[in-house]
Image (cartoon, rainbow, N blue to C red):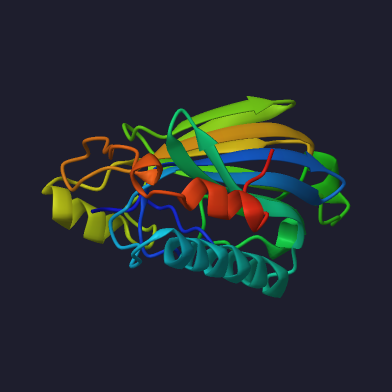
Length: 222
């Protein structure tokens, strides 16, 4: 299994998922984010029976919250949802833009207008979404935004990626909220080493009683 290209998430679950989805609202240097891992795979979730599997999932939720708090975020809500038989992990949090991990696909930046440069002002905190040209990642932005493309050869990980797929490093794409405000919706499908989008069959319904146990423990969000 291959993680989404250039994606580094705070989620530590041993298994993987069909897609990583970010829904971001940005204002006054603070990002409000919903991070959703859609259709968690059974692969690597080491448990047997409803109670033990709920233990593993609850430990995952707590570890995700811990990492976000350590990074400077404030967790608003976290847990799981079942959608059309698929188990999603969901965490909603706020975080100052400058505390975002620069190695993630959501990159903290500062936008400087020409007047800011002339006056030696730092500009406004904002985000750029980094992805590779031709990848299945999709980015939508609402608010003042722009897209820039360029060679990815100097980006960490690009050379290794090129070696795996047997091709030259692809172009890099940056989608930027240019005024430090607005919204972004980012969908990052998991792919195999050939770039093919991956999918696993839902499994939670086959783990008798798991959904009921998760409900009793307050792990399922509305």
